[in-house]
Length: 327
Image (cartoon, rainbow, N blue to C red):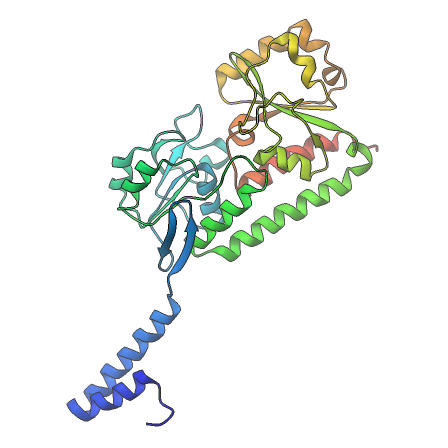
């Protein structure tokens, strides 16, 4: 039996004891189990709450973060449950057609734990803002993956997506999707360099109480920068916050740059923006006179993240920049 594996030697020994036919069959079963076990080594993930082990490719996935839903769909995995996007009762419009039957199990700020329990998940993908108390409950149901993201960083979405990709057993697909986004952003920057290399840009979210200037450290402002624009916030956004306090109409000159990307989350915000656009304070902005105000979807631009969202944002940027190309 020299040179034989321990499992093979065990099969021979077993055959000697109970008969060669039965021993061989049982031995082969052990070998098969051994190979399967070797192929299904658990993946150990470093998360905000310590190491999490995941075996195989989960099938009953629940996402408690918009970036996790986006990443799951990128990986070809359709979750059973997700949280509603901000200021809505469903997932963001850009993903709605992909998950028409998904169950809503909470909002970005509050998880309905009972609804999650009812879905019997074998994997839960959550946001870095998930509380420790909620994690303690959810982690008893299934492996719960919480990114160890601190503060705001325009590149953080990539690390989060890769972590979720590993959890899902589809790391390769996510790596390729991120590389595609990076290549496309670089291509846009090169294509429009002559026209926009010196241009600055602001992103604001218009709310009923007024416009909020969005941080330069967010997912979408990072994409604007990657596409070649100089994103600014005029130091209106306090460190560690996603946006400024509401601005008055008289203070709009603080965001009067070369480009102004304006997002709204819902009908109330859109109505407030429509009213503001009729004001003299808005009309006299140089960016308005230069026709460089770009209306964008607030659900996508100020709430979402992930590879699918990145491509949709780059679509909007490309469409806007195409208008400045000299024929």
